[in-house]
Length: 561
Image (cartoon, rainbow, N blue to C red; front, top):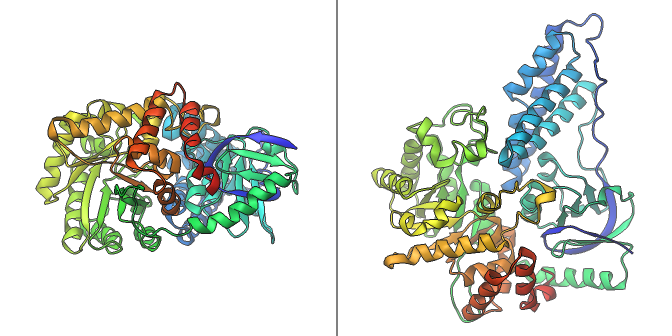
């Protein structure tokens, strides 16, 4: 048997035949010129038409998707209309370059620029190259690259998957995802979890597997085994049986001794909220409000915003709904709010900081939230992203009070916010840990890069200590402010136990993870969770922390988690 070891990002144990992603669209010949009789104006018009068609096709796919997939597709569709991409190509066409070669070179320049910026912007480089291939395919009259067609279930293997591909995977045909690149917080990983598909990333060498090869995939352990034996087959059968036990959540997160841990959902809009309510979520822990407006070139009106928020509030009458104010910037550019020319957008004007350069937008959003709250029965909490200081927290709290919003909070995703949580939490009512960004910033490790996957995990002792500092700060001087987690860490059942042991009060995650997290929490008492948290904190490495905790939670192996 041949084994491949990667990073497990979504649990499940399955066996199936490999189907490799099709070869990418071939590069137009270097130096390819405009064909005889074609003017630069005609070639440019043809390019813009192709780009528009790609944009419309991606938008149509977004309408058929939901949750993270919908948001990713909408963001990718924007790249097809990127002015830098199209203007760069038009300049090359004016010099005699063919439109296919022009868009190829222009996209390469844009992608290189984004990659060099690092952080979230490096993630957008993948989107640009995906859009480039789709535009060239459109110009050639070929089918766009994508998931291979199949009438039978298969394990999808690739070097990496473009957001437009992962966002519309059919879980009825795709048994599991395996990539040789990517990281634990990449688009592939996040969407696999939202779809409930077993997934392994950063498994070097798997893109050389031949089509049809039978493989066993363990999405929790990160293992891929070719020509699986009886042990693997038994594990796959056992997973099929236990998976049904993880399909339902009774609507109350609790430890074995009755300590309540509300389990909430992360959503991007009303459709997600309805689905989350159907899966038993006890409320919304992260409403990504910017996902409602990714396609907008201009700021939506207060009434338009209020309507979008009301759709989410309506799904959870009488329950907590936590909105994150516009987290624009970096990987989520909004033309009316962000500056795409920043040298390092991941560390630039994003989130709360946009009020420095576009004053009034945040104030109007808070007005819209207050207006929607008045028309609903939801318990509305509001938090600002990218808060770094107590002064910023105080300013946001004051803005909320002016708008009539009673429960202001902050995201803890910048290390300085964790280190000074006592002063920051004295200004607001609650905090929520964004573990994706907190990990990336604490470890200086781009979450999209496979080679850095070992660094970019919330199991890192440094990250766990920042979580502990945040909780301790919330309790300092009698504050007793609740601290939740809304990053991907909350969806890992083993890590969820550690977070509860560290004092986190609520956990918010993709709705499909609720049942698994609830099942594991019910097997430990609060004292046991606290003991496991101390084990993890005392570890020297992330791997040691994870293995120490998992050894003490045999239920994870029993459930295939």
